[in-house]
Image 1: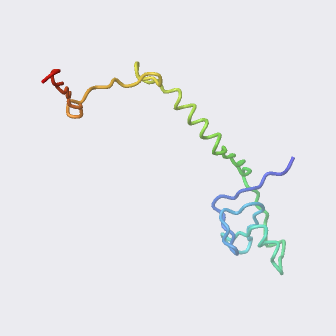
Image 2: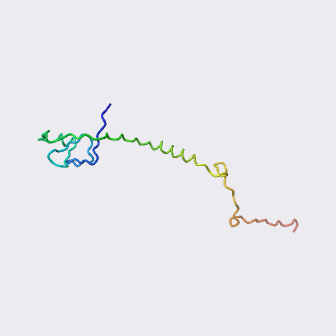
Length: 118
């Protein structure tokens, strides 16, 4: 199995300012509160191993939580919305009752037809 990356919360690399330090962390034994990330430690030209100590993280980095694809998230939301019950008589099959609006009603026009022979 692949080794999990270390995370050092609260530790900042004294050279590149990475925070938190990910991976190996090296603490100076000569300078208080001075740490280096692995990349900066490896880049030191005159590195005296007696002046540094490798600090291991207390816990491995948490595994990233995979994001749900947008389509899957939309399906889940639609499924949740379908579970909501509609009030009685308001289902998709029924239509709202139409109420006549007297202001919009067309006038009842009945033309009088002239009597024959007039």
